[in-house]
Amino acid sequence: MFQLETKVRHWCKHAIPVYWLRPSSLAEMEDHLLCVIEQLTKDGTSAEQAFVIATERLGEAKLLRDEFRKNARYSLNRSLKYTSELAAIGGATLVFAASVGGIDVTAWAHHFLVALYSFPSSFLSHFS
Amino acid sequence: VPRAKHAAHAFACFEDQDEFCEMFFEGILSMSTLSKDLIAASATPLVLSILTQGDSYGYAIIHRISELSDGEMEWAEGMLYPILHRLEKQRLIQSYWGKAENGRKRKYYRLKKAGTSELARLLENWRRVYGVLNKIEVIQPCSN
Image 1 (cartoon, chains in turn purple, red):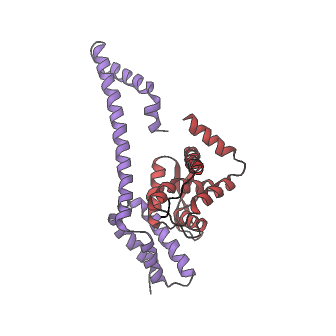
Image 2 (tube, rainbow over the protein chains, first blue to last red):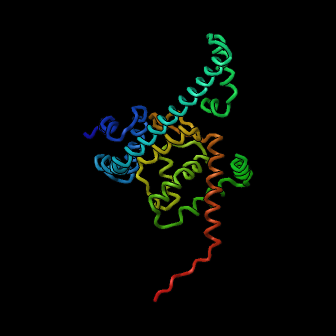
Image 3 (tube, rainbow over the protein chains, first blue to last red):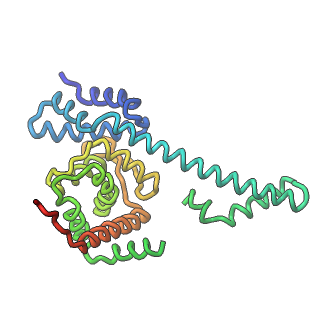
């Protein structure tokens, strides 16, 4: 007998590297395929056929991979932006602390926090 | 920012938001063939508009778009998921895990306030483009 759920799960695991999926998207993709298959079988298609149609309807692997990669790049750019902003604020604070006479850890931390909260729009938006 | 706030306010004040969404869909989807670029450009407002009608999940969103377009707007179904994930990264929507009627694990998406503002901004943009197109008197090229 055609073991639908096992077949879908196996297909999705295989699809992770092909589609550049995150493992966390696995259950979502499984649910999608099973929804399509359920609808098709309700309309009279066999489970085997419905499985093939459902996977084909996902679209060309390359297109999907490109879209998921765009997301990965978006996350990377966001992290880089955040890190560079943090580094800029830290650097500016360091220069300021040095210019007002020596660097001690407490003063550095104090100036850093002051600088941090002076730029709420650029910095705090990362946590909203 | 004030313009986005204004648009969001306009959207919130619209008496019948369902009717507003229907009008939007009818306008966008009444075209018989849509280029890939147009489909890509309309994907975000479409998804956000559907989520104004309540929390939903991938398959249901695709099904709704197909239904509203009488099957004329067919996406590669997998393409919806990177779009949903991107909208979530942009904090326009929020996902959560729930259970389907049959007990299966299912990921639902909910529109956030920022998503409503973004939708209002996008709809305003579409309306502007449509308005400009309407103002242009198209001169048919001479056939001979």
